[in-house]
Image (tube, rainbow, N blue to C red):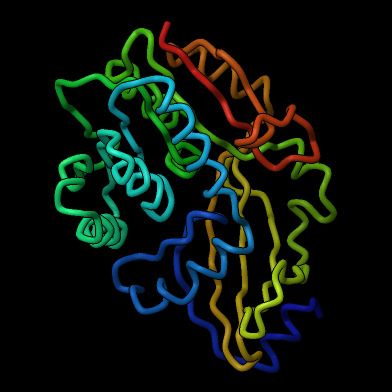
Length: 282
């Protein structure tokens, strides 16, 4: 019996939801009450959004122009850009995240609100006669695509909206990092210790196993506050190594200007879970 089976035997009470792995923790519209509880926990446990926001602000100060924000996590990136008077267009089709963006916009000073425009539409259906100096894309848009062909289609969709001298930044998960982890894709539940000392922090178990397609991996997380009730979060991602991503970007019509191991500019390494790409339109 696995550790998680033992947990199930004790608790016997599970709630199943869909969220994005692992930092972009958003639930479907019907799961709004849980969204408020789980988002701060996963955001704190797998924090990288603050690094992305700091990077984007620094880059925008030296590269003037409007920003296209494609479904970036909690909406804080778009909010912080607009709060610094950087024209930002946030594209999002998840009803919960759209409402989060609208709520954040309401908290901006009135003369700052015009700097944040919200487009409630899917990336695959995005058509607007405008180009952008900077595009920031969250990894889940690509990695959760149904097929590799759909993934390529999403990348190609962004090309006409990037100015010739503009920059496209995207983070993806580093396959080499996961392949060096214990029990990767072996469907074995492992306990993950909290990374902060908050007394009310939740307990977290995780496992991975192969998806239906060769490049896909299923990530599952079981989160508990009391060991009497658990929530299970699941997401299926396309994972590729550095060379595979570079080939995909090339086919989609981009040049890879640079690649880092995180938003602070660390070198790419199997010890870093992220690949951060700086792309230019060909």
